[in-house]
Length: 121
Image (cartoon, rainbow, N blue to C red; front, side, top):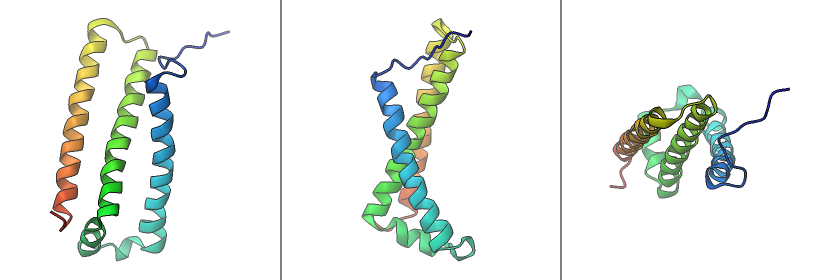
């Protein structure tokens, strides 16, 4: 029988953050689908409507937090999957820093787009 192995230490910080971000993402994704697929149908979504939604501080903050949370959750999951596959040593360090840099770039670009879509700033 195969031995159970996970790079997540149970009750560790990364393990806990992966679960917290998953719960947050389920809630925000449900809100997103309700608002943009059931309340407003795809044909009704316009740039002006997006700009109006993004100009609400609470919506803007939720979407930026959604971006940061989704990025962390995804990258943390990929990193731990690679560790579970046996990634270690120098390769592990290189992959970690490539993922960190990619995450920062993704978040910065996402925030730039979010700011471009708002009239708050």
